[in-house]
Image 1 (cartoon, helix red, strand yellow):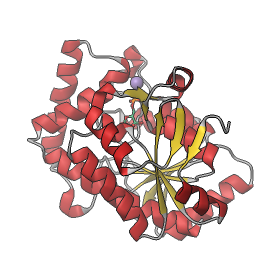
Image 2 (cartoon, protein in one colour):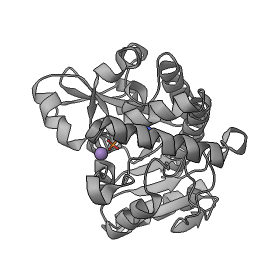
Image 3 (tube, protein in one colour):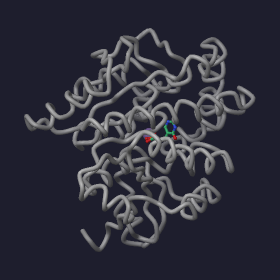
Image 4 (tube, helix red, strand yellow):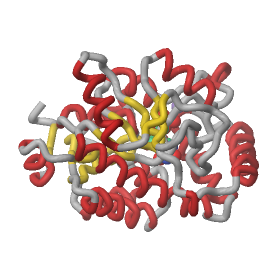
Length: 301
Ligand code: PSU
Ligand code: MN
């Protein structure tokens, strides 16, 4: 394992001293946002974690190593290369490592890397889920299986409505993954605070969430938890505009025949275009908001 794992010294020190660390993913940098906003955001997210008394560890596969904690130059590299960097989920890891390539890690791959390093809390924007039309396409993100088996809690802004929220919740229930709402009983839908669906449990404080996670793992239940943190009110988008943009993005995706791992990046970019960039502003703010909550949970853990 030591041949593959490369932990940045400040992250290694924090882990050795049992100090709070927050994992951050890199697909959101390479495939989720355009340059230079992706670079600026990745640095701001790290700063937000630091401001809230935890150590950030942005994760990627670089030159055949699992890097836990990146330098600013490495983050810039991933941000500038964008979609040229291979989007890496669980199934892609052995190829990237054995070929000594570079990959941007999705939620699933980031969870795996975090667990290997001993990091328990991870902040991102949105998780993958069961896609609309999955009864035909079978498109279900590997993120959901990872949440079922890897002991890392994922703070996100709920489930984006490019996905089928109802089916995603059913899948998570079957897999035994608790969906916790931070100060909300309603599942947030990424750009919006409302979705019409309920979370499993409303949690009011970071401490309550840390207690639940500690308990889950103490009794030997493997897997993570989804911590759904609504986008700040000021940055939430109009639900009707979002529904329209998402419906149109999905129609274009289907017309173009875009499938598999290209789907999510295509839909994110299309929604941004259709909302004249408003979705990107909201996306950045909700990621920062999640980084703060993740740090607070990590402190209690
Ligand atoms: N949702 C977002 N932004 C993202 C992603 C999802 O709002 O950047 C990324 C995450 O890295 C997530 C991945 O793990 O997309 C899911 O891709 P797929 O649907 O192909 O599993
Ligand atoms: Mn998929």
